Every structure is written in structure tokens, then in C-alpha cells.
Image (tube, rainbow, N blue to C red; front, side, top):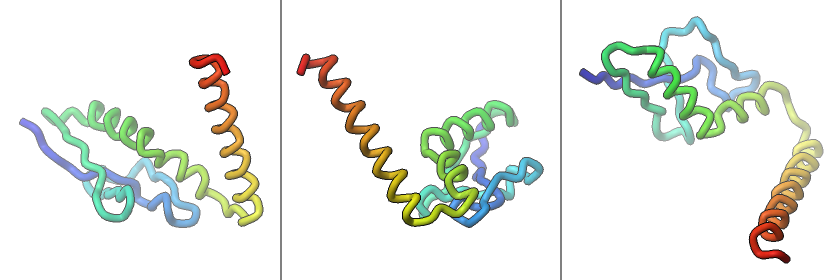
Length: 105
């Protein structure tokens, strides 16, 4: 028998200083990816460990851990611009490396 429960964090990662409280009941938590749909985890045969692994995998795929880490402290707009520019440069260099490896130029 499969149950469907909604699983989320107590504090939203989009709130300042949002984080995860490990002692919060799973049935009381709700995550909203973009504010419209909750992240749903299916619990089969009351196997909570398997559901937690699935939750962590989905959260990693959605980038929620990265958002939570970034929102832990305030980032000044100038620091944000510098960080985003360096990330863009990193992505561009990676793209050039892959193209050089694949096509040879």
C-alpha cells in the first residue's frame, strides 16, 4: 500500500536565515518549489528511510540545498553581481573546453 505525504522544511529557504529543523514532524512540513506546487514523496509500506532518501535526491535535483546555503546570510548586490559574473565566466570556459574536446576547435 502506498501513501502520499507532503514533505518540506519548517523554514522556507526563501526566507532570510531559512534552514532545516531536523526535529520537525514530516507530516507537518511543506516545500514549495516555485510557490505553486508542493514537493510530494510517496511512502511505501511505512518505509520512512526510503522516503527520506527520495526527498534528499529531489531536493538536490531542484537545487534547494544550494538556495538554502546562499540565503543563510545577506549578500550585497555588488557581491551578487561579482559572483554571477564569475559563474557565467566559469560556464563559458566549461562550454569552450567541451567544444574543444568534442569538435577540436
